[in-house]
Image (cartoon, rainbow, N blue to C red):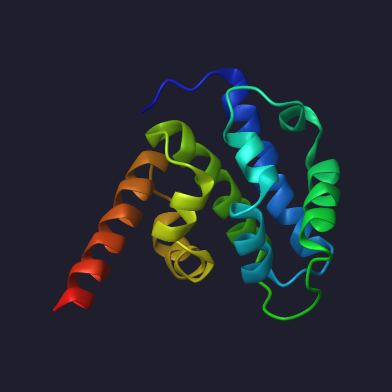
Amino acid sequence: MANLSLEQRQLCDIQGRLFELALKNGYDCPEFIRAFMNSRAAAALDDTYDRLQWAGEEYILEELNDEAGGLKKAGTLYSKEVMYWTGYIYRYWHYYTGESSKAIFQTAGADTMNDCWLGFHTFDVEMAIDDLKELSAQKSKAEKR
């Protein structure tokens, strides 16, 4: 398992809580995830240090809502568990591989995370990430045939 610092683990938790907060506020979950993972806010969390990292999930959600020009309400809702797990895994993934949030989202989008949660949420975090990457590689290979 990667040797994440306490601060990195705290950021994983903050991002998990951010995703839960989006659900609590009634935002369309797949659209929120897409908007966040492609946002300046996510890129700021990817940085070695950015003030936004310690602003808390409420402030990050406000920043994202402003950047997106208003996040979409209603639509598809995922469970609280799926949202927290997805946010946590995405942030951990960045620390584990060094990939950007945008690249991570391209590998495993919102629907993939929702579909895989039931089978993957009990895995070691790195095993889940490795399996998500393998699923993406298999899907790409199948599409090329």
